[in-house]
Length: 335
Image (cartoon, rainbow, N blue to C red; front, side, top):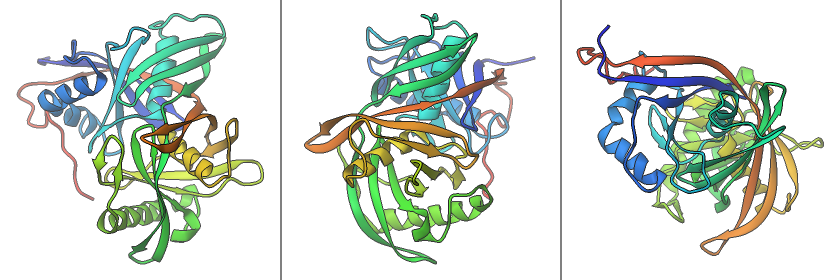
């Protein structure tokens, strides 16, 4: 066996989406903030991102949470997020999974039924509570950073559909175009995944061609994520599907996207502080979303979201990087 780098991960799924938590093999990353550490990784180790996320070690829909040392006194550890197309500021599924892994493996000692786990991210400090039953974590609640609507009620012309209303919202640092499923001729059902992907990509193309999107903290930006959703029903259940990356559809409800939708529902007057809804993914698994408070982001009304969900550990892996491997940096075939 020949390898000049060994990367250790703990695998899990959160509401159905399979993910990895990178726990060892990087050493200490330079930087006083998580953004600094992510930038250093991006500038010096981006081949590890592609090597881990792309084939033959990964796949086009893989998202990995990278664990770092903390940067604030109260935090247990830090996280940033990598995927085949680059980097995410935040990820609900990954953060829920990381908190679950931390408690179930003893990285963070249990403190009874409810264990606080504090995590540094690019979006800010995330306070989580991991609630246990016996020896496993039953659910994790994220008390997250502000989310807000950046551009409400815009009209775009979508190829093959026509004129479509769309909202641009920021969920804990990630930017989303949000469109009602009926407006693009679909419903949020598992058997319609391919059509959801096609319509979601068409919306993304239209948004980036027709709108000038500018948000606090990012300035002018493209929109890479599209949420196709249905409004909450009488029981407060709201199905949604995230279209992201090279046309993938998230099987889970999307944590940061759910925060963006909380902000949208608050903006429309449908929800206030303390209100909740159930954000349901394509597999029928869900997160519970709650507006924990109100705030502002550069003068814009914003909300403080809370998300509760469950992750399950699925495995432990070690990935080898042979210096002579022609596919060391990974590959992705266009399909």
